[in-house]
Length: 182
Image (cartoon, rainbow, N blue to C red):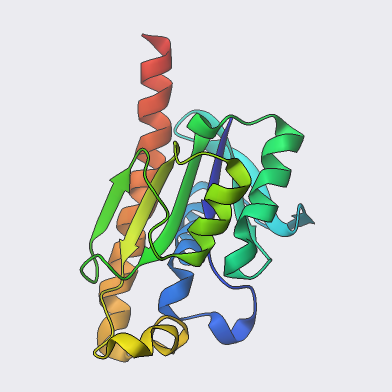
């Protein structure tokens, strides 16, 4: 079973912001595969279903970003999920806007949500899909940049990026399935 997590902030005021690329990707996966992400437990909202022949849990932690790991570890413990079966999707200012990057392991960088995840899991060895949101014009404006509303011209670019990250998440479950059958 896979646990696919999208990081974001739960309140409506944070929808349509750069910081919710993970939530946006989970929404796309849920729509594409007919998975209802409506169950409330584990300090999050989640749903279960099948993607590319693999059973998955889609999770949107409802803690704030910097406590995301609290929700994730509860789901992992309850379902006995190993870190190699995690895919975590989140925004990254160090990547060009609209680009996605997949890493199988690595540090949290400056992302507070990922710091919480690494701290709770006590490992950096799990798959993450980073959705590039680019950098703010002024370095000291990072917080306003990530939680500010998206300008029209960026919405389409980031919409495409979340579609790419959705496809990559699905491919990663399929690839793992093939690898485990070899």
